[in-house]
Image 1 (cartoon, rainbow, N blue to C red):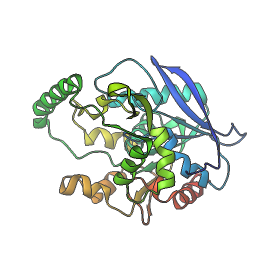
Image 2: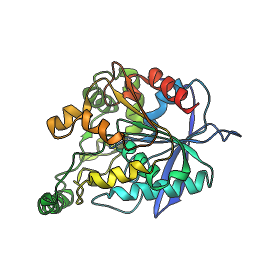
Image 3: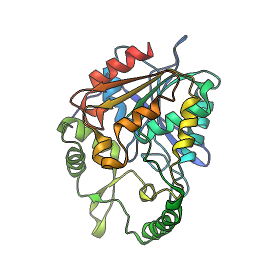
Image 4: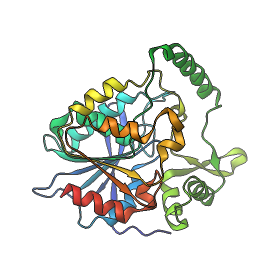
Length: 304
């Protein structure tokens, strides 16, 4: 199993009615901005371990498990609203950093949160890193009736159990699932991640199972349409320098085909006043797993 080089500690803080689990590496350092790292959909804060181990210098790192993921607990919820992630991040920074500016890194869904937050609270961010947080395809108002109907249908599926996340018979089964999703992920890292990505619960007939640490409500489609014009207004108000990192594998093209392309994403990034784009070779969407050393070096150079 993978052996971490820099050990983290777990902290639990009350935050907007939830008991938030926050993974912390290192300690505050005078003259250095805290590094806040937010994970993507169906992931956990521990996912950043490989990248943190590869950073050339020790940093004070704060990484939460988003509501409904990992070890964060809260009220039962059958769906999750995107603005709540921004609200949670705002409260998290109040707790850990107060008025001090931070360096903010977000992956995938976390990258989208980071971009929106940096536009809404530009004064709180010193440097911004977006790892494959592409946003979503443009929508049309005519899609709204169908979107609301789909949202209601999926709520019923959550309550019927039809959208429940699969449980696995063993920790090895979870590791195999991670490697199937990401063929570049080595067995040592997969097994280490598995113990943070799932937990052991009592299954049918008293047999133990490993349940993914993510709520089924996260699978429910958002009731609101994605508004590109709103996203661009937030992008235009980002005052921190932005490093937008993408993998050599075109994840966006794989997901959306011609509905939304990398060229469109790059056009949107032009609204950010200070933006540079970097590419990590031989990597897919989970680039912080595939090439943690190359990514850490690029991010560390940008953060300075």
